[in-house]
Amino acid sequence: MKHFKDINLKLCHSCGTCVSVCPTGSIAMLDGLPKLIKECNGCGLCYESCPGIEFKYPEFNKRIFGTPEADNEIGYYHSICVGQAANEAVHRKGASGGVVTALLLGLLKRGEISGAVVVGMDREHPWIPKVRIATSENAVFEAAKSKYSMVPVNEILGNLDAFKGDLAFVGLPCHIHGMRKLERMGWKNAKKIKYCIGTFCGFNMDRRATDFLIRKARINKEDIESLEYRGGDWPGGFSIKTKDSRRFFVEKHVYNYLNLMFVPRRCLVCPDLTNEFADLSVGDAWNKDLSPGGWSTIAVRTPKGKGLFDCAVKAGDIKVKGSDKSGLKEGHSHLILYKKKGVSIRARLMGLDPDFGIHPPGTDFNERAFNVLFFYLISFMRTRLAIFLFGLLPVRLPGTVGKHVRSIISTVSRSGKNKDSVR
Image (cartoon, rainbow, N blue to C red; front, top):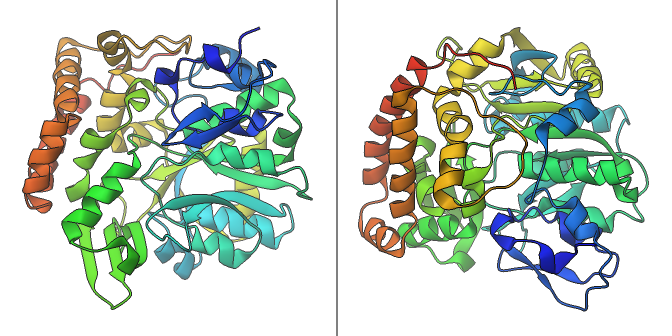
């Protein structure tokens, strides 16, 4: 039987699943990676539950949706729409449409769940995202908005033994993959999760990205009162408020270049953009025909997710507009080009090959050429030299250039979006 020492940590995406499932508490997250802190008993549960080593899409599509086939860019879905929180305070508090917060608040209000696994900011160290179980509406509200930093969300699942009642679980694709593997194993605490609500994930960053921006702000961490990754009016940006009321703000699309500098190596070979195995997935809706102010794309995937969605609409928790997969793909065309169409290229160039059992979408010459060049750009941006050089520049200068680069990416991605295939 394979156990912890057989796990290739180069394939670890720091989800925390192995920490939660270890029956002897022998694994802990240290410096962003799981490490043995006590003797391993060789039970193999960590290896069996690890989504970084493998997560076979056809198998889980059949297990969760009843078919091994799904759209190979956005996954299996029942329906797609765009929506907003109906409550204006919840909408303003959200990263885009505030839909995830509205769903959780509705579930709590109706007594369908006793709490939700969410990521907020550490109260004692407000520059560090921290997973917690929110059992009140205020706690859910406090955890609103995206946290662009790696968080081992699943490690909290090991602390649910004494928790009474059902839970909703909010996570990135890697967290949801871990949850689905725990469910397949029949692990006891996975049975306490009633709903898996997934957020889209194009890029994530390690904690160095946050430290980079704090340094650029010339603010001491001990002086920070609050920190948000999507603060201010939509689309928001990196926002710091100090205890003496100083403020620092960088608009989201301007600091996006940090994605390339601080993206974890394992994230470069993840093919899940739209959180394909959640009950219901939510992400920004970047469609140009929507009124300004922030909308969320909602992909309803499972019968359980449909029940949650229908109830939220009926209760007036969210308001929705019709959409379809073409609208989703158009709004995220640049990320589909990078994350879905380029994943096999990066895996080959990096020599990393987690087992997903999938065939990426077809690509033309321009798309393949772009992804090769983009990979080498990322490879340079992740070097110490690049991080040092960009640290010397005004934080907004590279981001302004990056906005023009993104428009080029969108042009390339639109040129090949007419290929629709099935996994």
